[in-house]
Length: 326
Image (cartoon, rainbow, N blue to C red; front, side, top):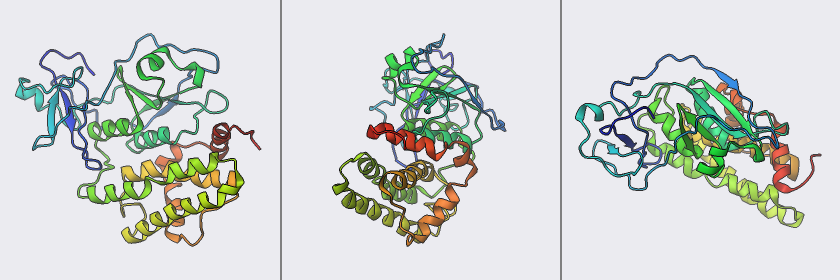
């Protein structure tokens, strides 16, 4: 990420929610976190439909190495380009590769554009990463892009995948990888509370099945299949309601907002909106804990500040269904 010499190392960390090893960017010794950064959100004009947008500086590629290994202390040194373990990095450099060792710098989040090809679109995975950034108060510029107006570097180097976070000249794709990067290098305020790893894993598991079922249901145009699909969705939501009752709320893991909430809330928002619009279905009122959760999470400042109106959700699913807006 920053002008590194041969001895500079990259970093892999075991994340509490998933236990996976994270390969970060090169770190120059002496870099320190910029603390107390004010929250800021700006919107940068991306490419409108039919108009290519090219950046003059091509971001470097970023890739999580499949060769990452976890040592006893949870940190390993990796060469950022090859993913090979580096054994001869100076100890003082290794000591710099830790939470808080990266400056805020400049951040851009390339994301799906809305129906006007300029505003924020309806992608729940962008919403996840964006919500985490907002919760941590990190300044980020949104760059909405229409499908045929993505920058050349994004298409050629990253298969056009969005969201894509560009942080000081390096690109990160896949919402889960973006979030792991942000949560590690900018740990405060935390979304991975100490001692909550088991609860977070349970919450991730309990909520993982909803979005695929909902997407299949909403895109289904055969009304005869709707009832069975809606029942499957209700079964998933019943499990989430049970989890919330078990943990006592107001969030999935109890009193603290976590990465599990930031991941699930956008998908729940899509579920509530799309089922009502396309299947004339509301979430079962008997799921009292779930309804209380929706009231809480949908009003949370980090959710609100990273969200988009319901009509944008409807527009997005109309597009996925190949149907016209009603």
